[in-house]
Amino acid sequence: MLSVLRIENFALIDQLELEFGTGLNVLTGETGAGKSIILDAIDAVLGGKVSSRVIRSGTTRAMVEATFSSNLGLAAWLSEQEIDLIEDNFIIISREIAATSSNIRSRSRVNGVLVNRALMSGLRERLVEITAQGQTVQVGQSAQVREWLDMYGGDSEIQQRQLVALGFSEYQKAHIALEKRRTSERDRLQQLDLLTYQVQELKTANLTEADELEKLLQERERLNHVVDLQQMSYKVYQALYQNDAETPAAADLLGDSETTLSDMVEYDTELQPLLDMVRDAQATLAEVGRQINTYGENLEADPQRLEEVEERIQELKQICRKYGSTLTEAIAYYQRIQEELAELNNSDQSIESLEQQENICWEKLTEACQKLTLLRRTTAAVLEAELIRELKPLAMEKVQFQVEIVPTSPTATGADKITFLFSPNPGEPLQPLTQIASGGEMSRFLLALKTCFSQADENATLVFDEIDVGVSGRVAQSIAEKLHQLGQSSQVLCVTHQPLVAAMADRHFRVDKQVITLEPGDKTNNGHPEQRTVVRVTSLDNLNKRREELAQLAGGKSAQEAIAFAESLLTQADHHRRGEWK
Picture 1: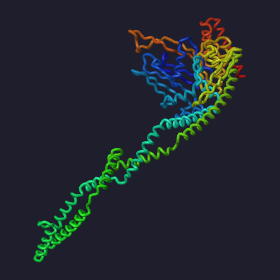
Picture 2: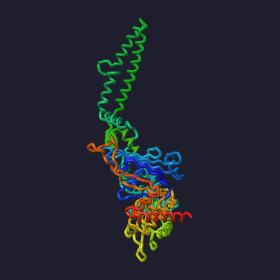
Picture 3: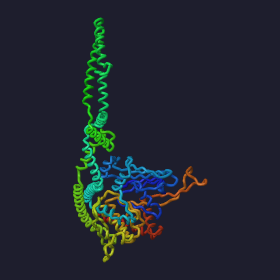
Picture 4: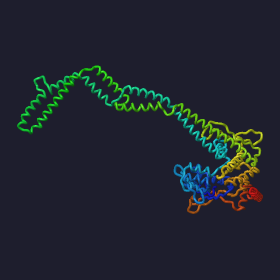
């Protein structure tokens, strides 16, 4: 319940504080007096859209603060949002709107905690329901009508709708996975062909040693220079070990040196290490000679092997050009594409399995939608009966009303298109409500609809903005009684021009515009005190003041006849209350 509303520098309101009570709270005043500004402020503090025009001219900041009383369900929801209630279980919501050079900024707080728009939207749904005659567009929207019907259906319907939303999400995932696989299948097959060819080519290449190419290049050089190597090895052999020419070989020279050193050691034993070194060198030289001789003797031309080496070198170079700058890189690439090929060949899910999964999810979704449709049809029948019952006291005794549920493709909200069908006159066919209902009929319909919904959710404050426009007489009286009835279970705020409605109020406020002169020191205009228009609200607790306001609404002036009529309205309203309370 909204208990206190504080407004500062909002449109034509400079400073305002209103205390609302339980039951029916009515705002009256002349057209343009500012009644709708107060409702705009309520909408703004609960996260509604605002523009720079809501900031009072001459100021740069507007503020709206609303205090609501809480309940157990609301307290639990706030606790989930990590927001604590303040003393006496109140919720204080504030919104500050500031103008900058290029745009406006606003900040919302709940019990002092800065909150975002999503949280404010969730809180708004739990606190206030605003209804106006201009809601014709909403009544014509299947999505909005569906929301109303599901809300009226209660927990079982909401829970089934959640199951539908979950089923739709699962189906969407399965469908997207299937489509993605179908779309990528051509690329997968092309990649599969490419990798299969590459793996086969690299497998045929038999890459086992990373240094194979270097070894082959060395072997090719040896095979290409067999004759030269034979000649040079024989030449080395002669120079080291046995020379056929007159020039002595190195081995002969070392032998002579050994003989001389042996003679010297007989005279000086300190030369023995040098003799040993020469003897070792002589042995090493002899071994080198024998090996180089064997190497030369074993060398022979092998054209066939040379051809094989050349072919292998070209094959390996071709592999390196295609798969890596070196054989090491080519071998690593071969290992990698083997893994990729195995993954492509052994994918977790084939198209067939994905199709099967999509079908399973579709069947679950359609089954959940069918259950939701059945619940909605049951709820629709109950709503039809109750709404007709609520419309009859509003001078619509012969009205026909039907909730039309037409199958559609499944979505997250079900597989139903829902339309309110209406016929105010006997013998006339049912047609969409927005196409046939007059303004007055729409007002009564919305009021009856909110009456039905208020029984499903008795916690929200109901706000009606001039819902009684275009009606008078007996219909206006029925609307007044219905609003008062709503006030017994929910707090009701109503902007009205109807004296019959205003007379039924538990609390009555008069809204008017006043021109004030600013105090000295405030802004001036050419040296003269500036005058400003402001909205003022008076609580009509005094019976005489209330009688005068009702007279103004009824007759436009406080004539004796109008006063007498106002008095009769108050007496009638009092009798009505006492009759309901018996």
